[in-house]
Structure formats: structure tokens, C-alpha cells
Image 1: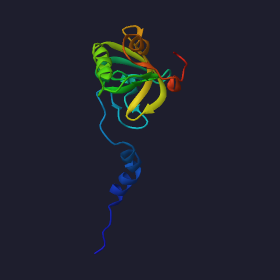
Image 2 (image 1 turned 90 degrees about the horizontal axis):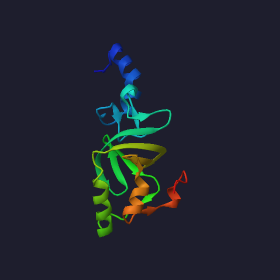
Image 3 (image 1 turned 180 degrees about the vertical axis):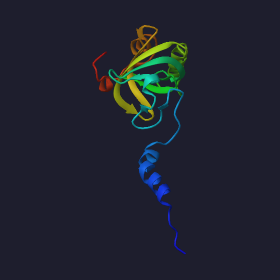
Image 4 (image 1 turned 45 degrees about the vertical axis):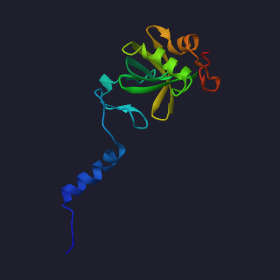
Length: 152
């Protein structure tokens, strides 16, 4: 017995296979694929990332550690900031300082780079440079190798 695919089904399969394969995972409330590469949004009108300037604006919804937090659920690695790891006392202190900003408004200039599952950017939180604030108030320091815009 020979199996044949009905012609209308075959047409749909051929036309949409690329779209189906291109997207894995769900979108967030803004229609964005936070974990996909490259990061992109389907609903450009509500996108938290401005295409022209690569700016991410929103609320800090989670703090992982001294140099990583989420803005509107999107992970951001702070460019040029090197904080001690969370499994050290100094790293725990840096995380505690950063966690005080959960719920604050952030504006991040994205560099275009990604680090693991995170976008990389220089961020202002509550009107101040967050990286500079962490360097001034914790054991975090500048990581010159990754200061791609020579901010520090």
C-alpha cells in the first residue's frame, strides 16, 4: 500500500515548515522569544526592545546576582561588570545590593552581544549607571576586556 499526502496538506507543510522550525519555545507577554537566538519579538508595537537604538526599557523583575538581572523577564548581563560569584560571601553581598533594585525601572543600551542566555548591555536603574553603582558599593569591578564602549 502506498501512502500519499493530500495536495492541500502538502502545500501547507512546504510553505510553513521553515516558520515552524525557526521558532522553538514560547513567547512572553510582549510576544518576544527571550531564549531564542537572535532575540526577537513578533509584536513590534509592544516590543520592549527599540529596534533603532537597541534599548531595552522596563522593570527589573528578577535579580540573579550582582551582574545579571531580568528586565520584563528578559535576562540582561551587565556589560563590563565583574562581580564575585554567588557561592562566595562577597558575591552574596553584591547580590543583596542588586536585589534592592527589584521592581525599579531600568533602561539598558544593548551592545548586540549575548552571553549564554542573556543580552548584554549597559543599564541605568533609577536614573544612575547600575554598573558604576555596583562598583562603588560592592566588590564588583570593571572588566575592561568587556567594556566595549569604554564607559569605565
